[in-house]
Image (tube, rainbow, N blue to C red; front, top):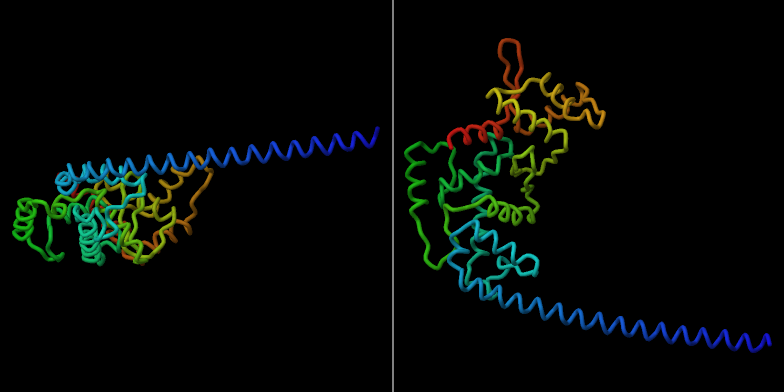
Length: 291
């Protein structure tokens, strides 16, 4: 009787193994069918995307918002119209456009680096680019030159060429910065409060540095003045109470010292008082006033 129970147990084991093998094969078949279906769907979408690009290529070239939407449609499919001049997408000339824009972004950032320490509001970068168009960037440009460049850049039109200069959007600039960041040049964007800043130096800014700049933004927006050491300490304490963190004088000093050393902040001594000014914040605020 015991011997028979052993044979029955072996039989059940063999039957279970056979069933498992069948389930595995079936799962592989379903997986293969699903993969083929997904590939077919992606190919169909690529065809539709190609037709869309042909139909709307002028809008893609000339309208920054439309161009951003188009790139957003391409991304989920793994399609990159920027990569190869030899690809079908070369008729859009988008690769050349973003490479040229990356060079212009670098020119702007380096031209103003001695003034702001390598940190500049994205809105300010865009404003300078759209004013100065194709020209090199000089800090001593006079008002007449600015007006002439603005007129030239806004009157320039393209017909079937690369996307229009003088119509750069913030999304365009972010894509261009992504190309620069791959070169290991220190170019990247960081959020300071609600403002996106462009960094063009390899200096690593931690949360303390970003928070100090954010405090300076708040003070300048309210009073149009620099921020004092005590204000930094008081405002950072208020902002971090939910985490029960208190900034010591040493912590405030460390953050300010690096920003001063990199040229991202300036120290102004007046009547026995010290105020820290941030050119990137000041330029951003003043440009908003003129809009």
